[in-house]
Length: 169
Ligand SMILES: O=P(O)(O)OC[C@H]1O[C@H](OP(=O)(O)OP(=O)(O)O)[C@H](O)[C@@H]1O
Ligand code: HPA
Ligand SMILES: [Mg+2]
Image (cartoon, helix red, strand yellow):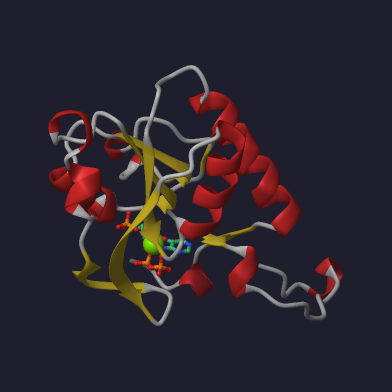
């Protein structure tokens, strides 16, 4: 993983994120009749809340996975909390009744770990990079692999130097 400072920046505001989550819900509506959402924490929590509201799904489970440290380097994936067997065992035990949601797929490694737990679930992310794209069934916006997505919960307001000063990224 390249240092985000050297990558293209794709900053996302709360408003844009809400719209993109609604667009994801529109794409998902009509594709399946899911009984539960499994969100991949922590990034999947916010899109899962919005999609659950739009699709009327009230059974929400989490799978807690940590991988990136210091915002840029991906370390070993750690499953901090597995999926409740009650959710795994819905409709045959392979995830047919489950919608899995995350904020993005980058290398696809996180999605792969969860796919191994729920091979027949539908995987949805708001954003996708080319390497991770084959791991998800539905997404809204693709960005290039050398783009770093800045989510609104990681951001704060700060002064932007004018473009003419030549330092804007
Ligand atoms: O496709 P990958 O290369 O595996 O990367 C994508 C994952 O990385 C980020 O999560 P992270 O592990 O940083 O944890 P967080 O959701 O708690 O921020 C993001 O939310 C995805 O879950
Ligand atoms: O582009 C990204 N942005 C934020 N978190 C991430 N985790 C993996 N890739 C990214
Ligand atoms: Mg995550």
